[in-house]
Image (cartoon, rainbow, N blue to C red; front, side):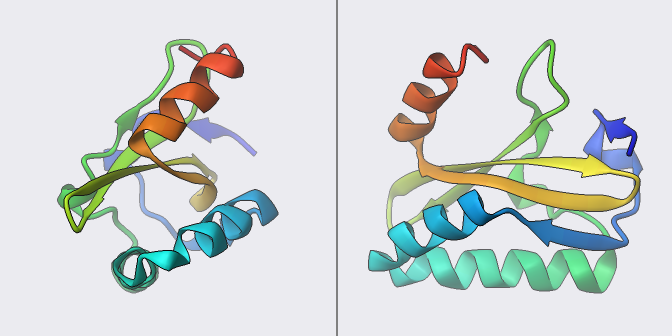
Length: 110
């Protein structure tokens, strides 16, 4: 698979959700709006093959092909990381904004 670093110029033909993303999503379910947003995002991506502008997708790291997007629900900021490889959007992580910062620092990605 060839990583795509610019998410806005590629059509998404399929999605893949990692086990880690599923675990993150299940942990976030205490806020039902997160589930609604993620479900809608998946629907939009699979239907139109594009990322919604509201996600504000942009390259997250200088040296890695991850893309980060913002999810805001109930005045709580969430972030998700994903990859787009050969037209497949791979959902990687879903964490609260502060948790994502810690995760990225621990992984040495920022």
